[in-house]
Structure formats: structure tokens, C-alpha cells
Length: 430
Ligand code: UD1
Image (cartoon, rainbow, N blue to C red; front, side, top):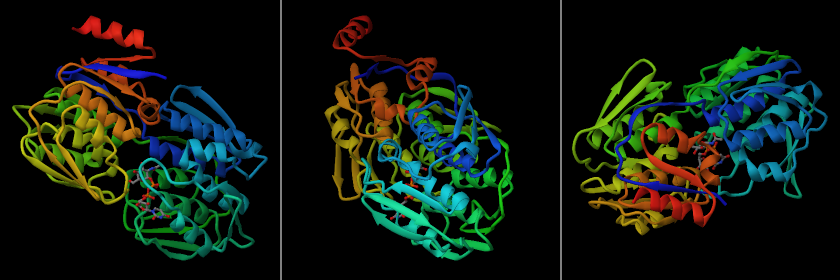
């Protein structure tokens, strides 16, 4: 089992390049199988969630060619099965996008029901409600969702909450249904827009993605396309938080500053200096950061996927900050770990009250999930002394070359896999 070892106290400086958005790529790679033509997708991040999804696509018979580290070509022509194994959904929840993709293309799909996960119970009732409205018969049998339609047709669908997954899944199926579909209370996240843009590039007719109402006119078939995934706003936000946390001064490159507005606004409230350029953002700090309050909300609100990282920064910001999580019920698992590093955090229900301490100190901690793991890396870089983080497999689900990119900004971080290597690192940095 690998660990990260970090010697804290070094302000991050220089430049870091952001990759393609993992969550957009998960949707787009699945959409790619909806045509029998070959599709080429560029700017795919090389992270384990993406590789798990590519495994699921190969499993059902799609031809998946990794042209280079960030480019994949896919052909859905060779697909032989509309049934996905539990093993894949266990590794990558977003395999549920295969429901919408296969229901649209083959009018039939069989995908295991994803259970809860580390951050919450995560039901998919809104996805299924949408498929039913489109005319599909949905049965749950032996832990599997069986979706089948003799006549997949347009419908007027109101989502009870602005779910990213449900919006994208319904958009996929509706693109190959007959007639018009309207999705009300649709999610507005940049990856919903990217997933819609890609479907349109394949010949779909989707309007309004990025607003609360998406209108889809079904088409008979989709065709091949070459498409580049948008930059990852959460990867970018994570580096912005890390620069702020260490009192650094660095540029985050290859971003869409508009997507980062909620994160930028909060960092500014805390006292960071944020300079937006066309496709990059400079973050710098002048003096001690202060408190702020955060409430996670669907886009354009503050993203739940940035909550742990910014909470880590708040752990040493002057004053009492209140962080309210309104999307997932189990997103404060980092709090106990941060407290082992000296933070003062009280979690009550969906609220964390963070009383900023002067300084964190290095400790051995465990990454509870992807973003909480990133938060602990940030905490390690803020802390005095050495921090060891276990279970970093979670972090590799969503961050490509995390340690390497942080070293590029001057951080002292190594990826190790034995106690001997941890001791060696400690001896080297004291
Ligand atoms: C996506 C992102 C995830 C991010 C989340 C919120 C991907 C692969 N993952 O997850 O990183 O944290 O958006 O921005 O893109 N809900 C229901 N029923 C449903 C669907 C959702 O009750 O059918 C609830 C969820 O439990 C949650 C809220 O709605 O409370 C939002 O979830 P949703 O937007 O669907 O998140 P995901 O698409 O799973």
C-alpha cells in the first residue's frame, strides 16, 4: 500500500498545468459508444476512475484504443453485450452512465445498482424516473437495474433535485428517443455542458445545457466526432487551495476562470489575492488568512467537491468558520484526521465549525475518500514537520501526477510504499 510523505511549511510557487475534467470525461467516454463510428476524445486525465470506466467499456465489447496518455479512440460497433458486471460499478459509480447510453442506442441495458459510497447514500431514483418517463420499463432484479423500451419517446421531466448524473443520463437516452424531451431543474455544472456539447458534436440536438431547462430533440442516430474535454475545475480549485494554504504565490494554468468563480470568491473572502487571466489564475497570499463561511450547492454555488480542501485551509485561518454541506451526508470524514494534526473542528450534522488554530503539526493520517484525501495533502503541506498519508489510492482516482505536480510547485512530497522509505524521507528532510 502506497503512502504520501510530506514535509510541510514550504510556500508553493511557480506554475501548474491542469488536465481534463474527470467528471466530464466519464460522461463523454460513455457517450462515445452511442455511435458505431469511431470517436476520438482528447484531454482525458490519466486517473484510475477513467481507467476503470475504460475497462467497463472494453468489457461490453467496445474497441478502446489509448492513442497516447490523454487521447482515447473508441468504437461502439463491436459491442456484444448490454450487461455490465458488478465489479465495474463497484470500482466506478459513473458506470451507471451506461444505462442512459445503452438504453438510447440499444433500447436495453442491464447495469448493477450502485450502492452507497464513502461520501453518502447516493440514490439514483431521479435517473430511473427519467428513463421511465421516456417509456422504459425498469425492473430491479438481483441487485441489477434492467431497463428496456419498445418505444423510447420524448417526455417532460422535472428533476426533484438538480442532479448531475440524472441530467446527463437522461440527456443521453433522450438524444436517441423519438420526439422532444424537456428536463426541468437540470444540473448546470460545466461537465453537463461538456457532455451535451459532445453529444451535439455527434449529431444530437440538445439546447439549453448550462441552464435549468434542457431541450432535446431526439435523432435517429449519432456519428463519429473528435472532441477535447474541458479543464478540470476541481483539480484547479484544489491547487488554488493548496497555494493559499501554504502562503504561496503561483499560477494555475489551463483553466476556465468562470468555472472557478465560487472557489475564487471564497479564497478572496479569506484574504487571498486572485488574478484572473484568459486561461489561467494567479493565487497569492499576503499575510495571515481569515475566516469565511461556506455552504455547498449545485453549480454555480460552491462545489461539494471543493469543500474538504477549503476546510483544510480554514483550519489555520484566523477566526471561526462555518462549513455547511448540503449535497452529501458524509463529507466531513477528514475532520477527525485534521484534528489529529491539531485542528479544532466540531462537526454537528451537516455543519462543521472550524476554529482556526495557529499551526497544524504533522501526523500519520488516512485518506477517507478522494477529495478528503486531497484536503489531507494540503494540510500536510501546511503542517510543521512530517505527515504520512495512508490509503492514497483514493486520491489517484481523481488527480493525475498529484505529487509530481506539487513537487513542480516546490512542495516536499514523495510517494512511498514501505516504512523504510518513510524513515528515509524523514531523515532526509530533518
Ligand atoms: C456528481 C459528481 C460528483 C459531485 C456531484 C455533485 C460525477 C461522476 N460525480 O455526482 O463528483 O460531488 O456530482 O456535484 O460527475 N440524488 C438523489 N437521487 C438521484 C440523484 C441524486 O437523491 O437520482 C441526490 C444525491 O444523493 C445528492 C444530490 O442529489 O444529494 C446531487 O447528486 P448528483 O448531482 O446526482 O451527484 P452525482 O452525479 O452522483
